[in-house]
Length: 139
Image (cartoon, rainbow, N blue to C red; front, side, top):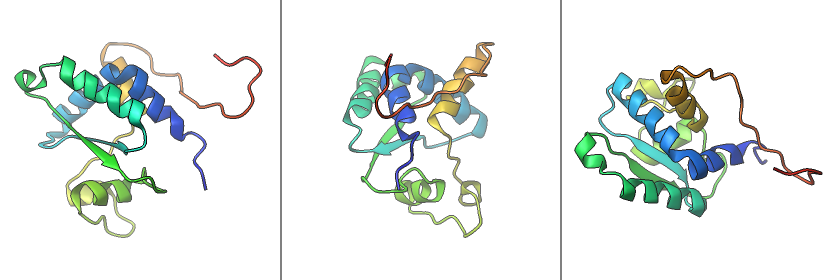
């Protein structure tokens, strides 16, 4: 099974990581996170490169906010909350439970992007989508 919208997060990370980072910083502050991890499949090399270049270009340590990059294997459903929590922390979310029950918060890339936008007073009513297949007028 293949998730049709799976490319959206990868493209946002590649092209707009500074917005995601700002949302990540805000969310981490609001939740009191002591460890912040950006987890994505290791095969998403362009997105990983963009994130690593962002980290190099910023003096993140001086701002008091830094994050780790965690490269997941190429398996389905790597983006599932329970799977992410286990892969990154080795904690098991109870059946029918949520990540918060084991002291973690999982947030979607587009949500973090929108947090940054909203905190600047911008409306966040648009939705990113992936269009696959033959497209008459690709962007």
